Image (tube, rainbow, N blue to C red):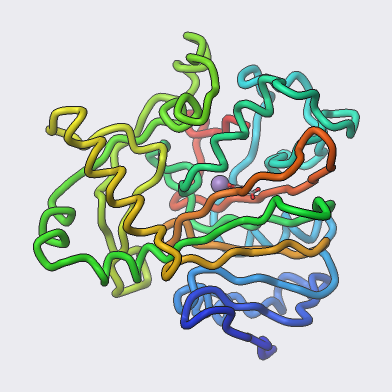
Length: 297
Ligand code: OGA
Ligand code: MN
């Protein structure tokens, strides 16, 4: 199969037109998709929307897949989605109603509107994320992507040398509190300890170096907290300048696949207590998933 790939900006993000998600798994052009991901960082599959089964089956072709457990934290009592592989990223409760304003779950998800990569707070990081828009609001609720490889390339030489030698600590609670979520409970804190990762890296299968930063990054290992926070903030600002960003306006049925090891992303605002937004995410990881790195939501 040859994919119909149409770049969306200069060299960053591309659309795959007319992709058919009923393609049986053994016929999916996995190598071609991986190569396109390496080139563009993110792909928008536009055509016939995948069912949840097709979404999960497609995602499983690209690595160990995240599987949720029963959630006891962050305001979710019951799952809306049948497939444990799908993270419920929208604003609907388990009965399909819009969460009321100020609901703990919605406060938790507000963290997605800060620039981040998925699951940098885990040892076993997310590689590809595959997000499907089942219902999208008439206005707003776009998702922005920033090119962390172009950002690394554009750093002054001295800054490259500096970041090449540093490690950051990431915690999901850091970004949640930044976004206005109340201080986590002891149970929530224990459910998601922090993880440490190099601030710059070349992902497996690629020669290009990339920044690896996110709003989950709370400090630089070995540095005074304030100094580390300032560096993280200035790198985030640098990497998310408009020249590195593609803004995705959703159409119902889009599947957007991004590489968390080469891009950053964030959700954007919409009237989330008025309009429905049903988006579901499958997430691949670097390695097989064991109990201790099961998902949080
Ligand atoms: C995600 C995410 C942003 C959005 O699913 O990981 O950050 O726009 N989503 O829903
Ligand atoms: Mn995300």
